[in-house]
Length: 252
Image 1: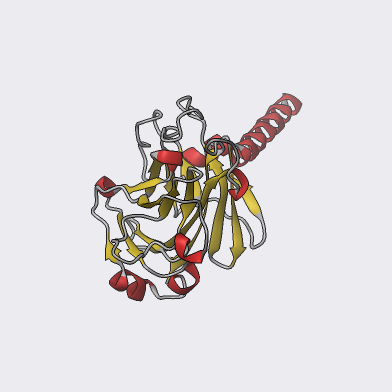
Image 2 (image 1 turned 120 degrees about the horizontal axis):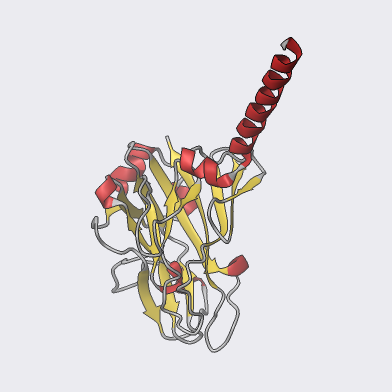
């Protein structure tokens, strides 16, 4: 009897250890438990519940999300203005959050949603207390600020507004000024310009988004591209969009 009891105890312990190990390894369980993705400096980890996408820590506190793409069965590459469903991102977790449906937010906290043309249009979780501003500064300058300095200097975006399309340029990109958000006689409205000549959505180079989450943390965010590997391909307009790449840093 003693031997049988010992065997049962050993099996139970092995099963428990295996379950604990499986819980740690399974991305879906990790996501539901709300544990943050924490890549080491110079390393990357796959985002949760996505088709493709990684988050890497480029240097201490500086993170980069690359080729962030979520298949939600509504994507139509023949329609350049159709969103690929809705993406949701949480900076405190460095991770994607799974929406309840293609058009319904997650039941738990999140910071930004991405929709619209190429999933390039940003909204914040205003109902959850998240706020958004922007700085007319490049990311290197903005991310070197303190949280107080950045937020005080930022221009507010309406809580329910979409921050995406900035201006339309009727040519293809020609020179550095084309990539600026600010232009003579225009008002900054978003982070990307649309180039009618080759139907490309291109990120501006002189604008940084600021996000304040529900805990009061301030993040500087630089949107880089909506195209797979940052390179638009396809004619008459690029068809490899909705692959988001951006970098961000929590300001202290």
